[in-house]
Length: 164
Image (cartoon, rainbow, N blue to C red; front, side):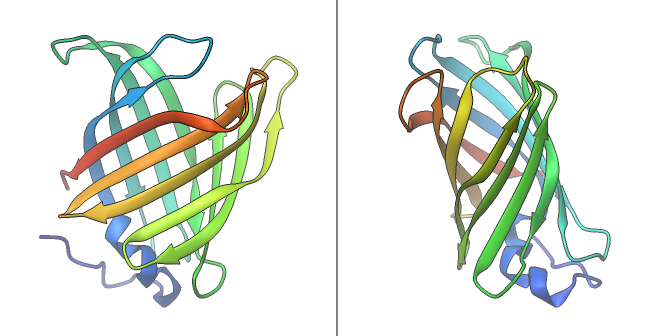
């Protein structure tokens, strides 16, 4: 059973349900790329300051569910700047930095990029939206993306279970 940390700042109570270590699997697909399955570990931590640390690691899975190779890594921070609002800042080792902005509802975050910065060597990526929701104690999420000259469309989705 999940317990809210004692030193959690009050402004983070609307996202407290996300704190912990989550693991699971999902699907990826996008025009011009292959499609497949991935595994994910998502860790959200709080050290008493008014944000959650965000650590996500994914890896490609074969048909039996074995790890093939690393895929994406995201490091960042989730903040609640005002009631009902959420910000997610993410950095990727591929030369992309994203700033998401959106809303909080009970056990649900809906966000879209407010800004995307790319290094000169990063892939063409212009925008994204994400939805995270807690359903029957599991974390479901989906991401739509606009990249490589394609309009916004479905890219990844996953279902994660809290492991700690």
